[in-house]
Length: 175
Image (cartoon, rainbow, N blue to C red; front, top):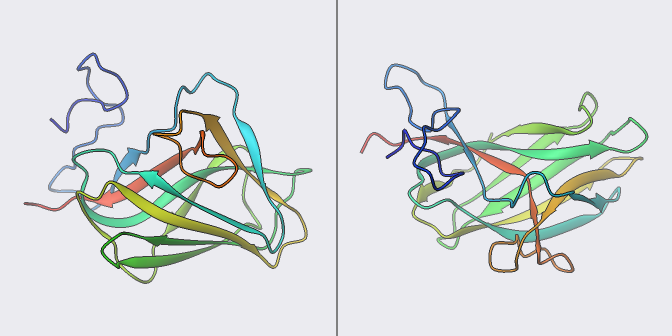
């Protein structure tokens, strides 16, 4: 039931609501499993010109068109610059690239990233492959990673038992 949360096992109502209102044309915001929020995350440092990759799970039952995502970032020394480049690919060959300037990014907040080209229809895939790169920057960027077991981790080489804090923006299909 899209009115219930995926975060807890008590069948409570989801907040914010997961179901989309048919009269609204806005994407649903869906959390990707990232572990226990009260556990201390560690920063994964993305150096200027650096990149890393992995695969994150998609919650069961998510269907629709991926219109963007948000990722929890941290700025070093109160500043970040350059462009964060994200490439997402599914096992069916669909892919998209997202470019986000970091000039006005805020420390320890979810950075919204909107798809501008390429489509990824979510149709029951288990995971999405991601590649993050920091271009044109003079300061590193921190991506907060929470402890999780390897099965649910985001398969980042060297950090297989960690999960990034990610929210998917999905325009749910009407069927």
